[in-house]
Amino acid sequence: MFQSFVFEEGSSIITAITVITFLFLAYLGVSEIAGKHLQYSKFWNVNANSGSSNSNFLQGKMSSKVGMFILYAPACVMGFASFFMYPDGGTRFMLLKSAVTIHFFKRVLEVLFVHKYSGGMILGSVLLISSSYFMVPAVMIYIQHLTLQYTEPEIDLKSIGVLIFLVGISGNFYHHYLLSKLRGSKEKGYKIPQGGLFSMVICPHYLFEILGFVGISFISQTSFSFCCAVGVALYLSARSNVTRKWYLSKFENFPKNVKALIPFVF
Image 1: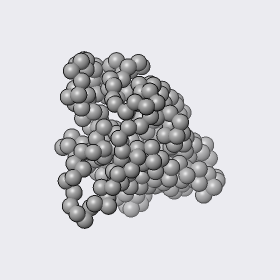
Image 2: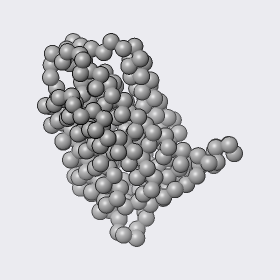
Image 3: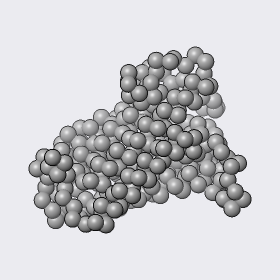
Image 4: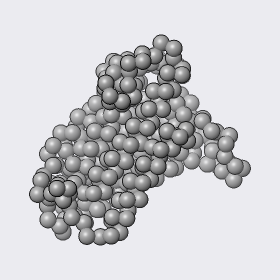
């Protein structure tokens, strides 16, 4: 059944890369639950003094805006470059390159013109996330290039994938916009988000980001892309859970019925 909607990939190297990538993303999710957070947003300064003297460089602080730009800019450049590196490939390949590029270009524009940041970011987390954001879509596009020599899956998911991706990226932007309106130009503190799905879950932007990656995986239909979507979902589920706990600890009036990620469920 699985093979009916996934490209058959004959390379053991690709299989190994797929498994390693999934395990890495799952590890990040487990680390969040265990309290070892990637140091950005509300958790940028957790365990700030726990590293050894040899890791002082990686514990260096930078502004959130600079850090976030570094997170997304390399992947954005890679997305645009993929059109020149792989100019051919048919509809599916064009859709995948477009979706990946739009996703990261949107994030760069949000960093520059939408988000209002407070706090900072730790260099080690910036480098880890930035390199992951660059490598995962780069490998995804390269594997898609390799599938051009294979037979298309029996079940074509790319059209529904485009729809899911558009819903995901639109919902993600809308809730990022709502978050940006919580603060005035000189405000630094956090407030309980309101509007949209924030009345039901504390991280609807994560929910829609997961949908965006699910859409990309449906467009791609490779084992690697599906594993990346599941891995991202695991990480953001864990991150949303600890984010909800953070709000509960900081705001006495935080509504208990507001879930972490999925309305009425989780």
